[in-house]
Length: 279
Image (tube, rainbow, N blue to C red; front, side):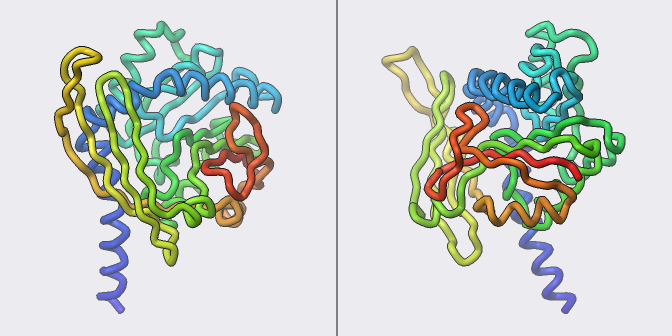
């Protein structure tokens, strides 16, 4: 029994380690990915701001976790929200603070803390937020137990009636129909090639992220290999997340393809977003 428990613990730890390897040990490299997504973060912030305003939460207290370099937190603070960002990476938190200064965020509107999304109550007061955000997702980067623990921790620091907004979730049912995928992300300084295969028995995507730095002027660029990282991600269909959220004290209100379009979620939607209320 002990050997079995140790094996399961090592497997869970292995999944967490790949994420720590990318987002903490190689944070300077991953920062370039997030820099290339800054405008998308601003668009997400506008959409989230609009949704929160419709829910009577204009200018409320918001937790953004994990916040990365503040690509959503900083624009939200500029829109009048009081934002706290938490991320496991000290480097990314330092960059988020620089971004807040660069964009002249008003004093007290944004603060950034190093911390684990599974242990929010260690750094934050109970029921101290009106809304919690998980944008561009980190759901599934560890074990299913890790995800449930995050949902519970987010509920602990969100007041009754507050909201949890999650966006950018990849749809398990879509992936099951399209199991082998090649995806790329490109920014001014970086090209990331993602290759995935799908383990349907465990609903996990396994693959490889390859990073290439761009050298030279546009039009005559050369690519320099900067590293590759194995990934192992649990992907969920909405109906799989609902009972987990309910077990953690949330009631799911709406599911969209995104908060930007508010298009209804369909079974063949590649990605989705959802809003849940703290009960």
